[in-house]
Image (cartoon, helix red, strand yellow):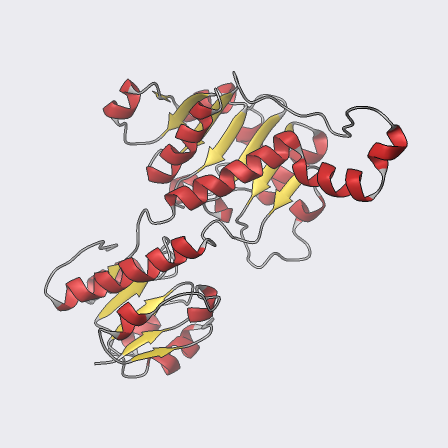
Length: 319
């Protein structure tokens, strides 16, 4: 029995405990694996493979002896799930372990867009702007009060529900678009609307949906044109949900007042990404899952997925 972790450093900053994985069997941990050929070479004769972002393609599966694949992330788009199902390889993911961390970062991005804490604490204090102005209170960007505004959430699963509860606590009205409607949530004051209604009514739009064929570039010029002038857009889900040039154009024109993004179409960010020079666009380097507690939970749940498989049980199947 042999276990391989293809990209351990993407998850571990030296602060995680992998003893639960090591208790299952011998483990080889690689820093980062970026290509299918590299994955084939590193997997070798291992039967059980963990990946964070390393690609597990049909080619990889055909040229190894994999029996089981586990994700050390909430996403599974790096794995050819359909082919894995065809050849009888179970893929297990780790759902819902980062809900609160994602909600926490979405809130941080939203508050920076509305209150400009970073801008005021650094520029105003360190460049003597407050002292020069000499007023009791000084601001160089107008803040927005969120109470009474409408938060529109696209994708109202666990992640969306966390930011929804935060928005309600701030006094916001919460509307959501999701293909599955939860009656219990409706009874708690959340309102489901159509996609067009969400675009038209929202002051803030937050994306919390998995990437699918039918929502690729859901934030595009056509849909941005339906939105309120001055809308704010948050994305802590998948970069491909946004047409980045269209969003940059809308930011520069003022149609969209600000965007807070933790994910981009190509990561790390490319120098020619138009959002880098767009007005009022805050970009963080995919850190929603960065809290140590969240990453440790990923390891623990992923390891338990493998333990259950070896005991003849299937939990958290992705395919």
